[in-house]
Length: 283
Picture 1 (tube, one colour):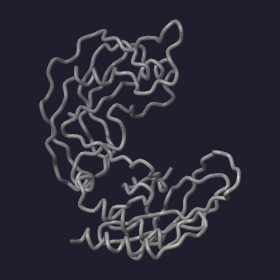
Picture 2 (cartoon, helix red, strand yellow):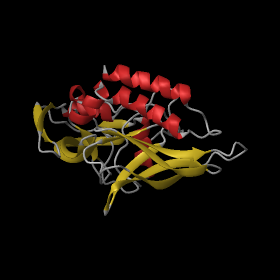
Picture 3 (cartoon, rainbow, N blue to C red):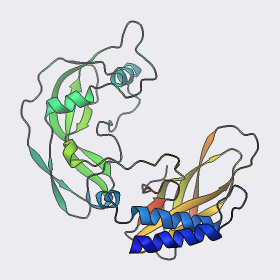
């Protein structure tokens, strides 16, 4: 019934709204926000985001690396690996993961061999092939089960991680040991929908304000930020206007604040462009 009412409200709003040149009018923004809320609230993505295991980065993204040697990056990207030692034949079947709210989940783990098989795959898209003489192989001499911090939709958590030692490379290669069966992929934007707000953060001393990070073109004019609020969700948008003329393709990053009617609390922030959650953190 709630979704039906939201759908009727959306139809009425769309029928009565107009455009401001190529800007989205307040009326159109509200109509889009209603659509976003109706689509997300109570969906499988909503449930997974709030109570599942949704990583916000790849399971093999290195932590703490500072400017790794070029050959290391290129060889890993092209999948040039060589197993030059023995991997642990056994590992714990499960592990306990503690969430920021204090709750605990029992998750299955992969073996070192399974993690190495994933780690050693080439990237899906290889922009720069290996030189004519070939890449220098990444020679894996061993692995041990350790721990790393993983950013998830529910906050940063320590997770079991396979740490692979590569000959001649000081840093360890990491692959999160949590089995794929326990992981839900981060939701992706639908075709034709584009990200507007890329990150948010709270503003110290101003509990009713959010700091939004967004991208804009060289010729765009920014008029402000907007928010549509419900008891569980906040949909945000940056009101931009294009020049309509010839402009370069450079993307610039900016920040802007938006004022809420009450503090954010435990409400989820959604981007009006994609209808997906905005991750906390502004660069």
